[in-house]
Length: 476
Picture (tube, helix red, strand yellow):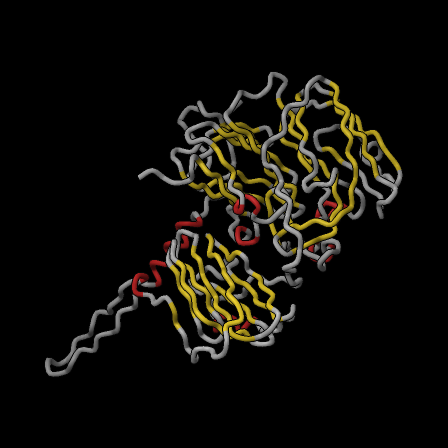
């Protein structure tokens, strides 16, 4: 097969763009003076401060008075705040502590002009008065707010601070939810990113049981989701070409609505295996896996958009009959979107159906930033394989791992192999909804390697993780 592979035009990497923005903002610039009489002093423009000259604390208003009611610790990460929402019991004076665990300068800016700046690895703090209406905060470094570095401190769960008041009008509109986070929401359940093992034998009977349930999809946000098997995405299945797959779809009697399943790896009539079953019913979906690849399966019950957007999708891997060559580690990622509904309720079909999709979160394996909080450990210099699927329902993926190059890509049956003539590589894999791929790579040195979609408007909305090679610390 010809070595060919189509990818989206490569964008500037996240680390580079933010570094360039930062350095450009603090460049020494002195305009060339115009000619003047010798007895006329030439005005000298003041020199802008360099990053190293930035004061840790800037305060426009007088320091707040009264007893300190508590300390709120906020971590600055690349690129976001963790956590980015607090709910305090009463208004008053609080210590705000910024712990910069990222690799670039961050700050926390408040509407009263207070700004807390911390370079990479630093911790800075200041007293801030939180009024009864609550307050929003941002990182005022150019581009950081737009990338998602925004947050809220509410008082008694009430927030009415106007967006234009946040940060004194820095930058454009922030990432804004129409649903407030709940600081009492249960912690999310980590989805194991390890790829499934190949099922033994040639005939596979698989129970796929519908479960309608609450799920924490991001810190502070719970949705009532529809699932296959109680997880989002559903169970990952792995077979080989020539195998027979017998899926026993079960819709329990306590379900609220009909469901169905559509396996893209199958060749069956839409009005046969793919028809919906009511609560309390079962259905057999049988097919022979004839084509290798990474395939999507999903609920097709109308409106299919809502069933997919509410969690009913999964991945099935079909290996070539001869199998895949061994590698050191294998992982599987499904990119998808959340369009938040009210806390504890269904995702919003209205938002999901918008002609220009604007998801609240874009995630890997169902939960925002879960692999940023829990880096995936790999061995330096060893071959890693990742199975990819863009489940959508509506946005494209540009899968990229900062700091490495894919030497092998199989996208929708088109191959780029590691031994290709010319030694070509791939920087990002472009996938539209319902497309899949396999990529292989290795890490050259110990360190951290961000996992992103290179559509950077979504990185700040949950599409961010980390591979940790070795101990995660580059050797100097």
